[in-house]
Image (cartoon, rainbow, N blue to C red; front, top):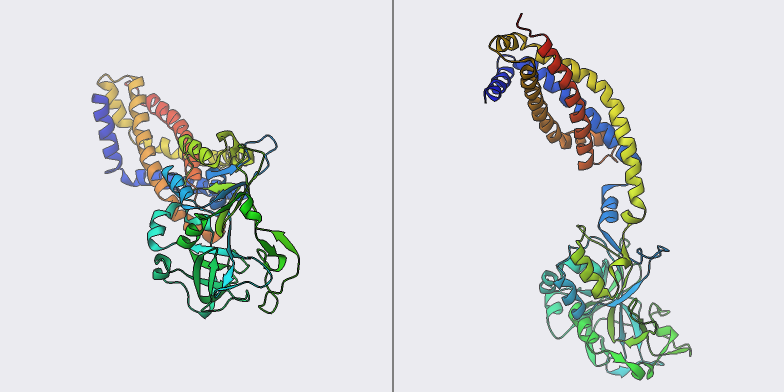
Length: 448
């Protein structure tokens, strides 16, 4: 208890009567820290990708990367309400990147009349969530990707259109549909209230019919199975992705038997299951990227939902990025230690200087029976407490320092790992510097 009281008295003295000397120690230490933090940031920029890409490596679950060959297997899932319900039960983190989603809508009649020369027409579709659905499906909203478009005729969808049972749609311009048309998707009717074309900045460059998600879900509940899928024919001019010339479909006389969707769950069966829907959202999974890394329980639940095993998952970090991180670690510690050698000389000199300010007090303690080991312990603990205090201040100054660093190079990014590496190196250097300073204080305070 006496030693702790002495330590407290020394530190109080350093921050009162000897404050200028203590301030000099702290300033040199902080400048050394910021210099080493700059070195770590520079090395990170040279060896690591940007932090957003780095998070993808850490937080990705890629299907097929667990295989020996490391290929990306594609898992086909129909995104109906049942899938979403099961997905939400897993309590997975929110998605931050889009999986590959194909939406398709088939219609067989326009304005009450059969289509000319074919049994159905196939359009790429983009479903939109209502506000209520957005709240419900918030964590999976990115599964739908984004389709940015301009309204070229009529109007866009409203919240009422998304919620009502009398559904509306915005068709792509140039696909033989116009405002006011009513199309029938195997008995499910939807009215065209506007025309659109993709924005130059859209992820999807081709035209899509924009429909309420509720309409797609309604149609997906009315799938066509088995032999029924071959009971209608589609001319190639009306196939998915086929844009008509001069906004008019002209049959080519080349047909396929129905629209068959191969839906094979990886690992369950080698025989494809033939499924056709008037409208469906097909998710071709090769990876999920989350805001946070999923735990083992969540990973097991997702694997079960997809019909695969946990071993079928992998991510970029597991496969190759850890080598980049190891390379970065080797270089950053090496360069920080080299920079730290110069810092160490400054730290050692100023710590010994600060320690020397208490030599007279140490001699008094020795006269009252304090041993050399006691003087060493008192001085070492006092110095380390000041170092730790200054270390905390230095760490808090790292983010403001990034404003200066980013002015030098806009590719520099704040990385907590660089702060930790700098703290570890400089803490080690300071620890080493405090030992000779404490020894020197003990030697310079003999009682005779």
